[in-house]
Image (tube, rainbow, N blue to C red; front, side):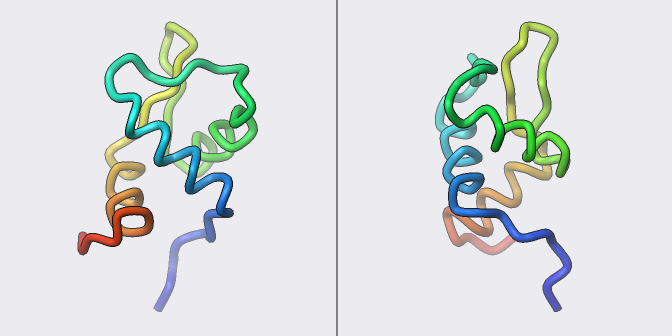
Length: 72
């Protein structure tokens, strides 16, 4: 049974970009800002003190399952 909230295509793309950028993080205020905020609300990303987003452990797992299609 599927228990996770659905990720829109734009949010999956934002999550993918978030993982690609790595340690520098993704700055707030870009076009995908609403998706990053949504990912944060879902617990898949967090906003650091420096104003940049980074994926959470849950976000990395979701990225592996949905974007990379790898088993958890």
